[in-house]
Image 1 (cartoon, rainbow, N blue to C red):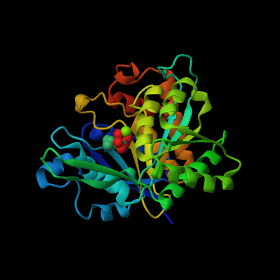
Image 2 (image 1 turned 90 degrees about the horizontal axis):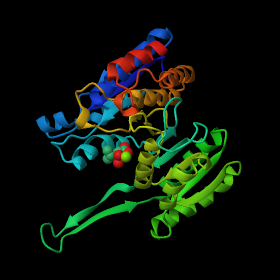
Image 3 (image 1 turned 135 degrees about the vertical axis):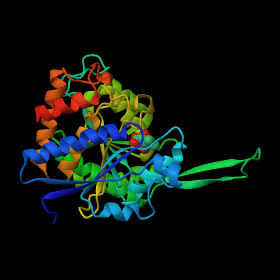
Length: 355
Ligand code: IPM
Ligand code: MG
């Protein structure tokens, strides 16, 4: 049983991570101040590429143990031009996701009030999706290798690994999520026409559990056709489940269609309440705007909404989401990616005021 003081591990990481996580911590403190029964205890971890350059490791060897005592993790980003991307990714974010078996990556994509979509005439009701990304295996399993390094006949392999357990749990997660939403629809994204082993199993496992969820309306879509449908028929989509790489790509498209990558949130979820789940904006480290104070903190604020909801703090979560929507609806204090001229600090001040 959790006490009513939330123990949050904050990992700003690289690039604009420090700016947006700093903004997020201010919002968490403001929420705690408004709710005398809600305590927030934030522990900050200096993990990331600076640490890698100084010590050779993105995080300490016992890093996962340090996280386990927390209720949730708030993560900024990993990625630095001085460090190869596969090192910074596998040394921190994937090490945490896979190490804590946060197997469901949940990515809501919703057009917020006042935000313009690049799609003409799309309404907020028509663009309200949740993409569920398999987060523990598939194309990101890490299996593979390099053989005959440096020779003309060098071979490189990245092996996509799917397990029956892994597929079944993500299908059930997505079906449960679809069931909890008003429209109760699920689209299963696949590529089993071309990928004839694991992707065929992906489809079969879905069919095997699907009967237990007859109240959910399901359809299946090849990933390439799904991109077209997202653009041309957004209103036909509710919850989407896809493999690790497919959902990575589709979620960037979804974020762009909802107005800006700077808004999009995500949760890396292990449904076991004893294991901390991790919440982060999906925008990445954005080194081009680092230190300029213009990073959009809304992706982090929305990620905190997801975190509070996951921890069962439904009221605080709803209040924060309502404040974000008031902020976007008024359109007065927005960062440049949303056509405004405000900085991170000003947006955070406005959000705290809206709270
Ligand atoms: C994401 C990101 C990461 C991913 C990058 C930073 C490796 O694009 O969270 O979607 O591909 O998983
Ligand atoms: Mg991505």
